[in-house]
Image 1: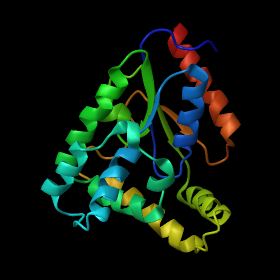
Image 2: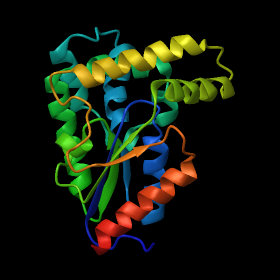
Image 3: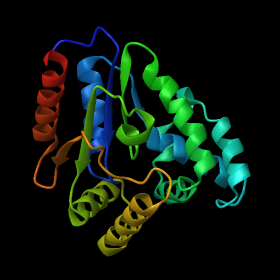
Image 4: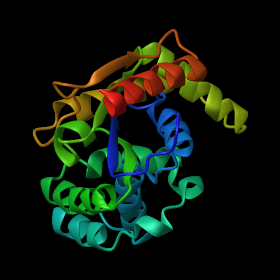
Length: 215
């Protein structure tokens, strides 16, 4: 597939540990498009609050932190910490925080030649007019297994059942929040990766994108 030469936006949504981030990075590299993991923007807010010893449930303080987020300075190595991820899920339920970060994300996406964005509400809220929308999911147990394997490889001794409960709790928060709940966009293509490796998911996603570009 040739690189994108005009403005083109790909929105990828899905729950935690579904594989959407890996898929988004691969697609962005293949298509020579900028990539934004929008979850990192929420993690950056949570990280700033934790560093400042601020409460995670104070919306004005969280909004102020969101306004200071620098998309060019997001460090996945730092923000990938499990505790930051849990804190980010709490921060993400705040309407004011979401509005602030969504504006940043839209600016990123609308800058030519376009972008690949992954998160929880890209196709439904951030980029409802995206050229391609994918909803990447997998069973909670499979997602917990992947997360457990990742943490084991990093030398972290964690209990699988704790990871599974955390996945289920995050799903409940993300899907149950009143503002921008996690759900597939009406015209999203569903990719259930429970029984897929990344190469299979990548191939299927590329086929969907090629159809959109040539259709």
